[in-house]
Image (tube, one colour):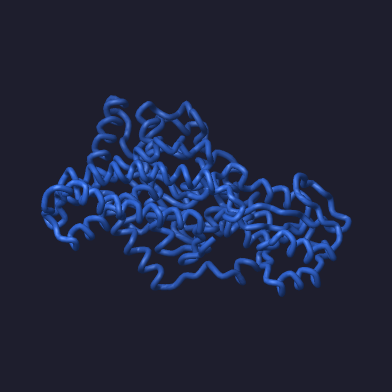
Length: 462
């Protein structure tokens, strides 16, 4: 993993991104050469170079938005051909706008077609090779786990469904008197075995995953391994790096103070506010036709009797309440029996509501909340006071997510499906705490770009 502006990026996927960026650049370059193979070119080398940079950048951003470099993606959710097809369609539209709406960047249509064709074939070939060889052990970090109980078992199984498994567990060390729950890996029982095993297997890192914090660790042997050159980390650090979460199971109060995160300040606040305003104005400029269509559809479905918008009290920054605005997607009597969270196939959702919730169009009026300063464009999902009080009683550290403004989109919304119960709230809180701890403009931009995937795939919609 590589840490960029506090956010962890997979080194393998970063390498894939750079290879494909170079592929796209060369595709435009050779697309131009192929088009003008027998005739003189209309363009200078500098002009072709600029066109190639624009082409590679737009196509790469489209791939990011569709989730083609997301390290947590699973085989079931991958769907390479559909993702690549949608990515190239979106990129082609954007490139047509850039190349032909701005005369200074105009490029021949035949060159663009050749470049897209070379890029498409080249990308599929590169992806085939990547996923054929990505399982090679040399691309995976070798891990030795101290502990052989339930936490060690959870760690071993934590990336089973990922396309690329960033690490492999070479073995576990069972502590004296502790329960054993792992299987399928080498089990060490004596501290004296630690350093020889590390040397023999080429372990890169040791992760301490003990079920009982009172267990006696082999401190001298761990220090020997550290002096030998092997990193030793705790589960909190490991999950933050590998899963982009703050693991609640291993969290303790003083960690919030002594960890290298949760930084604020006037400059960060001003920076974030500027991004909020610019992103909201851009979204408003491109989405107003959809907002008008949604408003008309809601009016027609309700026969001009129900409201188009509705306001609802939500908990914002520092636990201050505010009124969020959304397009109405449920019947007007949806909460006549009291407040309850939306569930899958909720019978209170209207026909129009089902469509606009799937593609997150019901969230668009929240642009006004962002412009007012109640919300941020990126942040934890704002919850209702009733649910916040309920979760705060049973979920430790739940109100820590309110250290920042809630957002239209966010890290938890991107990484986890829609939450409908306490278990889901716990899982999403782990992503929210990661965002609050590691916030940066870079992370915000990544989330904004990835939101394209959330909209197109209807992830987390109910």
